[in-house]
Every structure is written in C-alpha cells, then in structure tokens.
Image (cartoon, rainbow, N blue to C red; front, side, top):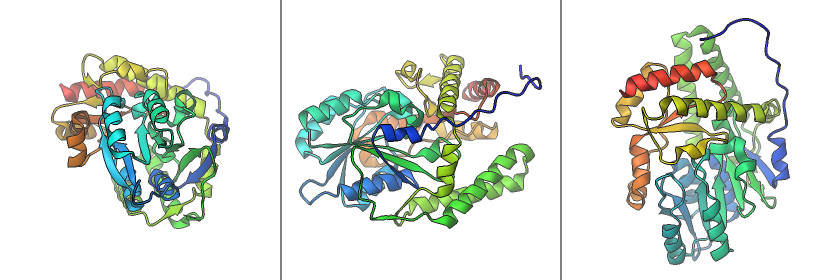
Length: 354
C-alpha cells in the first residue's frame, strides 16, 4: 500500500562519494565513458607488433570503437554462464596473441573479475588490465583490485548528470589531447533532462516527444565522437550534491526486492544470488521473443533496454554472449524507485512475460 503525508524525510546531505575516488588512485574526469576508454587507448597506443586488446564478447560497440579508432586490434574472449571470465579460454588467447591489454567488466555488479585479473598479472605482468565498472559505479570499494591498471566508469548511466565519466589510474595520464568542455552539449543535455523531470508531473505527450528526440540526438553526437572532452563544470557540481551511500543502499534494496518477487517466475542469469550486497546497475532477465516482450513492457510503462547487440565475430567467440544479446532485458532497479514502485514493476513483468 502506498502511503501519503506524515513527516517529511530528512534532506540527505552530500557525502563526497566521488571525491573519495582520489583515495584509490589518480582520477581523470571526462565527458563520457567511450571518451575515457579512447584516452587510455591513445595513452597506451600500441606499436604494430603488440596492438592486440582482448575484450569480452559481450560488450557494447561504444567500448570497442575507442580502441579501433586508436589503431588497436580487437580479439574477443568468451564468458562463463554467470558472465565471469572463462579463464581457460582467456589463457589460450593470451598465449596465442600476447596482447598488450585485456579489458574486463563486472557485469551488473555481480560477475567478479578478481580471479581473471590476478591470473593475467601473475602470468603476463606487463599486460595492461582495464576494467569497466560502469555497472557497479557505487560498489567500487567492494570490487577494487589494486592489480587493475585502469578503472573506467560512465557515471551518467547511473545518475542524472549532464555528462561524466572517470578513469582511476595508478599514475596521471597525459591529458594534452583532452579538450575543454563542449558547453553547447552540456547545456542541451541539462535542459533536456529538466524536461524529462517535468514530464513526471505533467505527462504531456509533447514534452515527452521533445526530450526523447533531443536525447537521441545527444547520443548520436557521442557515438560520432570527434575527440576527448573534459567533464563539464555543471556535471562536477552535480556530483558534489550526491550522497553515494544512499544511492547504493537504494539500488541494493531494490534489487533484493525485485529479485524476490520475480524468482521462479522469470528466467534469471545463472548466479543471480551473487548480486546481493552490492549496488547493482540493473536486474537482467532472460525472455523468449525479446523484442515483443520489450514493446509490451514499454506499453505498460517499464522501459527495459537491451544490453547489447553484438557483432557476428563476438557471437562466434561466445555462445553465452549471443544468448545475452538475444534474450536479455535490463530491468531498472535504481535509486529513482521506491518499494511500491518495485512492486508495480514486478507485477507488470510477471503479467507480460506470462
């Protein structure tokens, strides 16, 4: 039952969560995750002899393109059923290609990369380890491994900032190729996000069409990135207003709640119980007729994105990744939603999937 009225909850003060990243290493603050990866790709630019990077077969093109653009050769490695690294296959690829770098990812805040990174650094200590922690931005301390050379997160995927990503590295990077913020991009993003916030109160169809159109245009601009830009002053100020521990708590409790409601009714990614205790990105579910289910969920007010379409080459490298690309929907469980919201989301999903 929803409750209305009574005493106001406390105004939660900022806790300096993102400022605390400086305790883990040198921080470079940029506009987007793909630009952060591109800066690393440029900084560690390979020679013709050692230009290979191993990447998980299940990953977004925006993670691949920055390295391709900088002249790296991409080789995909497979994953286990629970989305952890298939270390045996990775070992064979390391021996075959002697890559300059390996990129890992902690999927949804649950697929630990600890064993894989430790193996790489033990057997190939000169190999650069890059980890994308966008799916567990609010769990960095619980997943942090000092053997990782670069941690990268696309912050704007987790909170309503106008732009933003971070690189946590052992040493400062050369930022000579980083441009000043693109103020027009920042202003447009901020204005569009304001429109989206107002839509929650008005539900005016015209407003929705405007912010959706503008957001798509902004994403296209990022997809066709022409350089690396620093994080905007606006986004830096927005981050300082946040309380990371409250956000982490909301994500954790929403995940636990939704998982308890859907378990046994919807197909889950194996090993889903490992998602508890952290601050996950979303709850992935597996469904048949994925595109049809996605449309029906959207018609009922639940927007569940696909993470991600993958290439034919990636499909050949990993059947698990192909399965995820074909059947996975990402259900929102983030800090925007209350206990009652999660109850409603679960009812909609169960009804539609049936």
